[in-house]
Length: 179
Image (cartoon, rainbow, N blue to C red):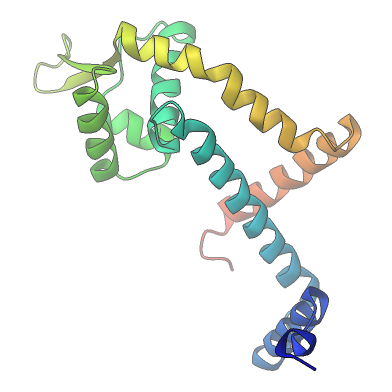
């Protein structure tokens, strides 16, 4: 008998983990722990797929989201650009992270800074034509990859999952500390 024969199956590992968690906190519902772990694995896998998909365009997921936000605000909000604070708030990322993203995307010629005509102490971030082209050229590939991730679910299953995740998101928004 070799070591591979002694290693527990994934189901046995999950059972051991849930037993361990129950010992730490007997009131914990093992189902919630399992769901949390599963959501984490799925979210991580989706993130990894997005990163992989976008690597062909020489972009990170965070960079692509920023470019997409700028294009959306330009086309559907008739916005002449966003300031870094607006980008930070809309993307849910720190101002330091936004600053780093802006520097990198600006160096690649995908965005440009322009003084805000309304408040000359601030500047706006706008897409360049190269930035617009980058978003357009990669959107079909990226969104096609995301579509394929959920293709195995029926429309009804997708709708139920969406409703359930919305409830969870609302619950988390009400209780950011998890209480």
